[in-house]
Image 1: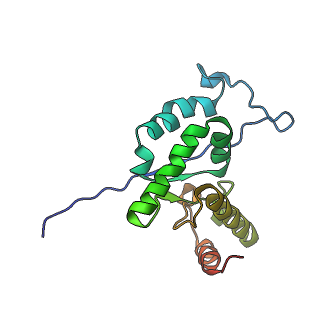
Image 2: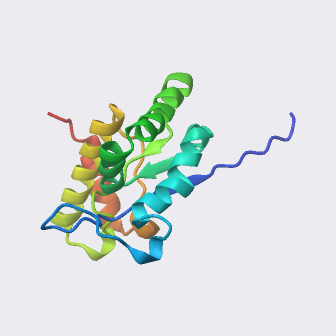
Length: 162
């Protein structure tokens, strides 16, 4: 049998909300120069080129709900390419390559059980709204995990949806 080597690259794409809660506008962020804010800078140097090169179809990835929302509102074409990459993998291999994540990037072992349940449910809901199928995995922020988090993941995963 030939010796085959494989490599899996997982990319975590996340941007926290940067909007001023009173105006809904992202203020000028000097450190993001020459762009007006960090979302735009990272979009131009990371999300956009990776989408244009088709890299989202070649890697495992998760995209945070706050970033997903921002891309959907501000850069629809790139957002659609990212979603399409998962769809193509789902059709070609029977599994998508996108993963869910807890909604607010919460480090789950530090939270109470009810908070874990909420973050996981909201993350799954956002994933299903974005990718139009159930997630087959969940990236855990800071890769932090404890027994209770694993139990919550299993319980939510095995519960029938309404």
